[in-house]
Amino acid sequence: ACVKLISLLPHSAGASGQALDGLFMNFINVFVSLIENLQPNQQLVLPGGWQQPDYFHLCLYIVRAVGNDKFTFTVCNTGKDGLQYHPSSFDPETGRELKQLALTVWNIPSRRLMDSTFWTVLFRMQVYPSKRNTAEFLYTKLLPSLNAQPLRSNQDQGPAEFLEIPDPVTAATFHP
Image 1 (tube, rainbow, N blue to C red):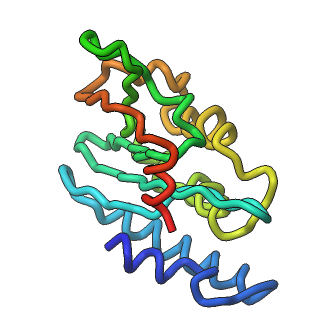
Image 2 (image 1 turned 180 degrees about the horizontal axis):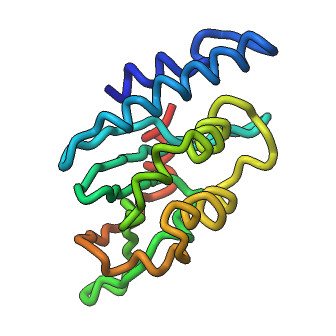
């Protein structure tokens, strides 16, 4: 489904200007209907990241319907940008820093994800290159808006795994 969504994103079609804007709004409308149709315990893996005029950063998003009109939203990030917002720990044997590479926002009311506003802003970061498309914006503004709580309040709300931070040279090969 993630590969199909990438192909549906309007910038993948090579559009620009008003054509891009129209395709983008059509994509958002179709996408929101996918979210509305998620059943409890179903999830959708989404292309994620942001694009600036001279730089892009890739990650994955996972949206999951957990039932009782609640969702979770997870950011899977192995790149250098944004990991500073992910919870840290230390390996007791080696002293190396560990990171929660998959950061989850919990207890999101369904109305927040059924509203196209969040998705428009989130996917705009991938479709329309801008210097304002940053990790800081995603992690300090957009993600906390999902459950109206500071990002750190999502720690210890569910399962979490702390992993070694990928070596920057090796991590560079994770993304095209």
